[in-house]
Image 1 (cartoon, rainbow, N blue to C red):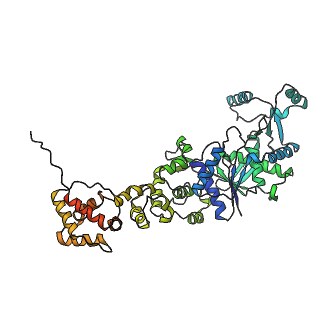
Image 2: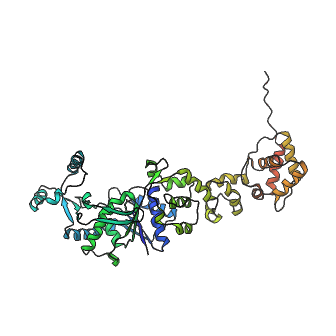
Image 3: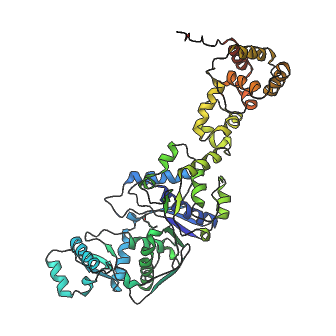
Length: 463
Ligand code: GLU
């Protein structure tokens, strides 16, 4: 059984990139009857906001990505403290005293010499006395995790294949600030252990974090840091998906701010977002599949490519339109204009690109409509229609068949004036479905009014 987690930091709203990560984690768990955890990464007390937590929940609910369990890092500080103590006792954590400026200067010097900007471990070399002197000077340490340079790092990545890292090429990460607050790296590892996470799927911007965290997992296990809930001492499987980019191939700012709010406003259905994101960047075709079970069946990390996944708004809109055309009345009834029943929905649905547009088409049924100005010949034709008109099971077929016979008109000449008189439009939903909804009395009145309607006087343009 798979346990996955989606771990947003509540420092903003979800955007299309993290919606995708949430979806894939949800899919892995749902496909295998596992657990999907929503973990709020809120150790950064200054930037985390409660309204963002609420918005994240709301967005996931709107998308139908229901989680089995919610966890919060701010409620788990004791666990991080315990992990810190265990690692410190095992010699894997050391205090460091450099200021941000000093570190920046070191990096510049290294880069200037053509060297990679790896932390030089100066703090690790300090003697007891030197540390004591720093602290006597009032310098509080921040804390680094000591990577084991003799322990090569490798994993089989679910998307990227075999990954190897030389730990000596990585900086010992800062895990805790001088004020005691936590950076992302250690709490996340502790959580993944405690919560029995079996699969970590996230963006490829986390690949080097994984390298570091693999050593943290191993060090915590070795230090006897026992998992809560008795989870097994094994590393999760890791997978890093290629990032999402704009159609033009660049990481765009716009994508970073494109969230559920904007989609909802534009009439994009959650199922369209899900259908697109489930397959974007994979070798499977992106199709308007409204059935989640079908998407789950075909979901497979091995179909994910390593090239950036290109997000195209126009593609989302195409999928949305196709999804709307499949939506059953029960899924939309609460969002339809008053009085619009199942037959009404079926009549207008093929003409919609968003559910919201149903309102505009429904006006053709409820009226008032705005008829064009008909010429004399057309008025005569509409008069004929009004006289011929008989109400029955299929009034449109009966009317057009009778008129065809009587007037010899066919095609556009037969249909268009009727459509214009009955709906005020040149195009629109199938008249066979629409006419019964308009109803006999109203239809008669509209035909009669079309027959009466005068063409405007031609302006006199003679000099
Ligand atoms: N809070 C982290 C982020 O949003 C979570 C990364 C992870 O999945 O471990 O990037």
